[in-house]
Image (cartoon, rainbow, N blue to C red):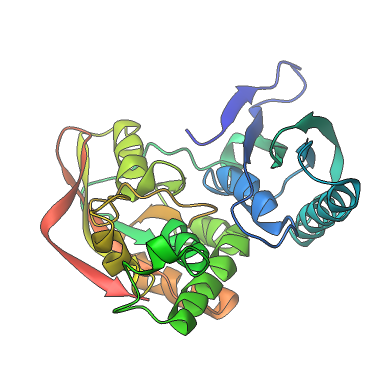
Length: 306
């Protein structure tokens, strides 16, 4: 599961559980405003259908390699951005831990006490369900594309098909995606009868689909037939000899979308309402079939540029 789910021991609280998660990483964008880190932490709870978060803690590593002025500016912005998005999510940061470290680190803890009925466990997918992905793939490559502009030895590998303006557009798409909360996708999971979900992050879409398949009670497989990918990212991956394994589904994502299994008759309505709320599309990317709790990308997978 994406989060720890522990039954509350107090006998007065029947069928109540503490749902919690911890996540942190090295910042991957130049802007130190810490919204991405906060969204990334919260996504683990959203993947469990938990839409109300009781509290958050912040984990912050302050770089020893920065000057005093740099540390003051970067640390302040990380804290402000993290707190601002937590408030947008309807929660607050009530504590945390700060350490000195060679490199900046940012992340945190999210916790919520919920009744069993408010949790969507990642285990009830059925044959005939479909898979919906709520954000595009390719964020890691989009960040790299922006960095390549200042690295001539890398830029020369992509400059014949990628303009500097196109790299900026890809990075803007990735930044918007990474900063966007998955809260609306999680709320609609309840409305439209989602049977399981996970968030797509460090293991790539196929890695997380495999974990989701292994968690199912029924003997099912998850088949991915469509991969929505930020424009030009497949070409960048190819220019670097498939270094990120993007078409194979293993490229890491940061604060990626939810991969949701839904009854097929509910999927289009789920996607329409989510786009109305978030202003961004989602995609029907796969199906649930009878099997042995495996996940795979079909040989004739369709790549959709975003």
